[in-house]
Amino acid sequence: MPISPRIYLASTSPRRRELLRQIGVGFDVLAFRNGERGEDADVDETPLPGETVERYVERLALAKAEAGVRRVLWRRLPQRPVLAADTALEVDGDIIGKPVDAAAAHAILSRLSGRSHRVLTAVAVGDGRRIRSRLSVSEVRFRPLGEDDIRHYIACGEPMDKAGAYGIQGRAAVFVEEIRGSYSGIMGLPLFETAQLLDAFGCAVIGSGISS
Figure 1 (cartoon, helix red, strand yellow):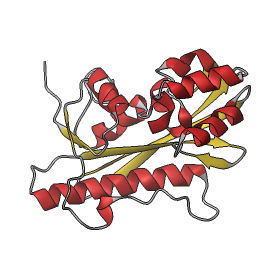
Figure 2 (cartoon, helix red, strand yellow):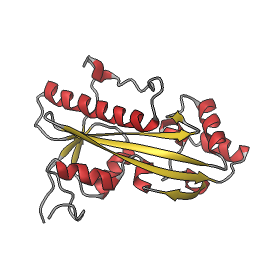
Figure 3 (cartoon, helix red, strand yellow):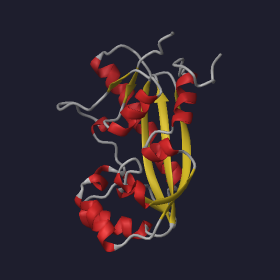
Figure 4 (cartoon, one colour):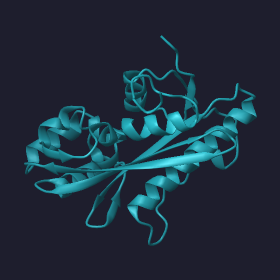
């Protein structure tokens, strides 16, 4: 069986690592190191004035991929494609990212209770010569949440590192009445779009049916 080329993953997200392993993609995590300087140290995730959530997640995914490519050059690592992604929620036109504390998580979950919201994940791949991105948009509906639901969920610690203050693959799965779109995209890495991008960079995912 042929072996797909390895890539760099410009993300420390355990969900994205799990999803890449699920489709058999070999990767090395390209984490930021202490002592490195420059704009790559911390991609500014503040939305721009008037920026749509579609543009926001795509801009951040591209910026993270570009930062990863620069890191490869700085460290003189073997040249491979760099993959990055960004996820955000949209409710009533507002961009919802990760909660900064328990109070913010409570406010977000209260807002999601008993209604639908959109989850958008952009994935980007670059190799120093070109960069491409794809966008996945899904809709999720939550059942009405009681105060105890929210309080107990926050107490477990799961909401704090996740866009929208929940992980669909975790305990919050019991909140979800319906999804329309990509389950893996809601987790943080849409596998269909990811496979298409990797194929365009010569890293075909075995069994995807994209390449002959």
